[in-house]
Image 1: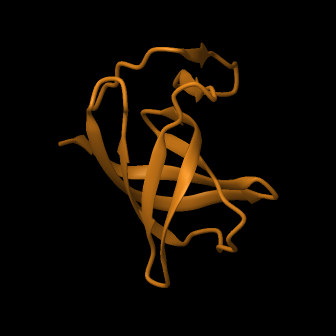
Image 2: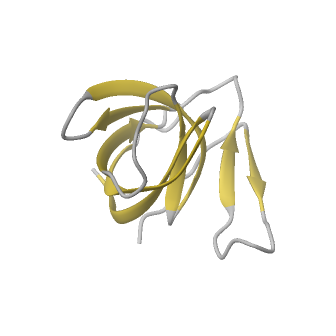
Image 3: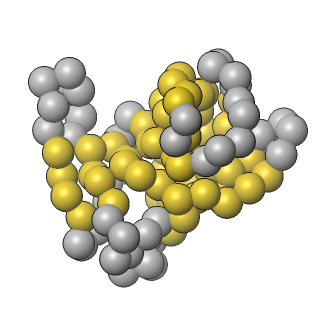
Length: 104
């Protein structure tokens, strides 16, 4: 299981979630490089937990679509890679549930 150490963030617990999520603030944004079968793009991460991530984007995707991600934590220099499926979408972005998550 991957772990991440980040400063200047908020960790939020919710009764609906089995994992705590890290909410990223504007001081130290985390950017993801995203890859699908159709496109490659960079976008900001809104929040992250060990089971998934919410990516801010105005691009159009389908629920169930496969996506691969690479993201860096600027303060620690850690790089993480993940692959998963889009499980949620709204006007501000997409929710991705991880299948694989590892630190490089």
